[in-house]
Length: 222
Image (cartoon, rainbow, N blue to C red; front, side):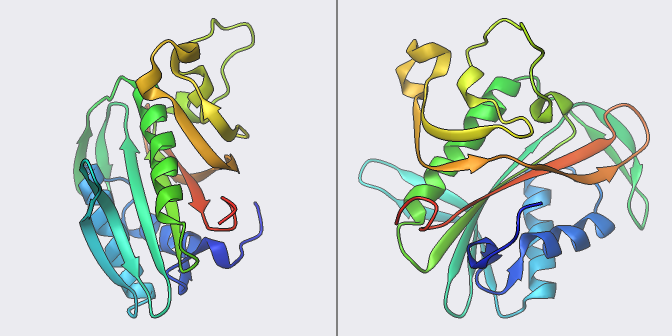
């Protein structure tokens, strides 16, 4: 586990690990990405009431409008958090009080990787100011996302966008070796990926892990 510094503090007040430690005790699984976002914001409020949270904040660019999943506004600094909740099929009961869940399978793991990397690139744009940082957060029970591809496996179109344990993301990433230029993604910083345990529930697909990538002005040379 890498040491935490000021660049990995949410809105200058608390660490994501503190939020996740409390959140997983209360909510070992979520119905949807919106459910995850709301739960994260609620736990953040409990731990750091001086941080104000705003969901789906519009950012108007010259040619389009983007929405920030969660904007955390502290007394002196701000953090943007982008969430991804990618699931395989799982049905069961969890939490207190006990609650039934029926998660759908999201089959397109290649697009899950692409969208997560794009989140990091978006956060790099946000973090050009010294008082702002960002967190790209993925929670999943799809083991193929954190597992390294088998040796000798045929190269896939999302090869450059792999986000398995220990992978280092940096530079210009080409989709299908550059055959589809719109999906090309360039990162200013370099990020070594470390998956962490979140919860283990009964049944196939009951193991959840999370990936947290912090972006700061220091990480992108800002």
